[in-house]
Length: 157
Image 1 (cartoon, helix red, strand yellow):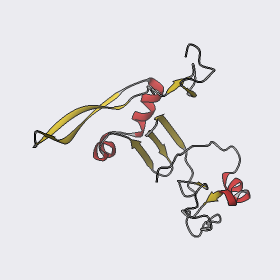
Image 2: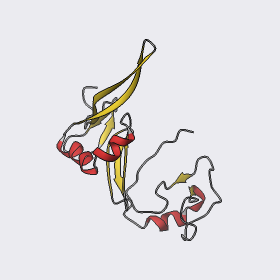
Image 3: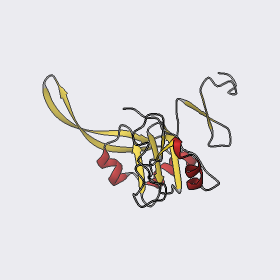
């Protein structure tokens, strides 16, 4: 099943918010000894799920769809089209930050297996891994906020 995600920044106590709205949340992935653990809404369609299982996210960098990284107690990175071995060994959280804030692009080499005319080959690709440009969103001037292309507030659509 495909799911969509969103990230909220809470200034108040997030646990208190969930406690007051437990009918809207699936907290079945929380530790069983956590005060908010409840499996009543486990896998119920339409319920919000805290993907971190009660952990606190302390930093997030989102470059585009399926290209983001965040920190809780550990670093978590997602990057569509880049092999997991390259992502784990060569791409650091700081690369995401430099890409976003300093508009720096990164390329990484990865090996792939290809088939041409029923013959199998290995190739080494030098692939663009991180890019600050999101072709589906318009970055607002002097900001990290974005609007979807076609939004009425974007001049010269």
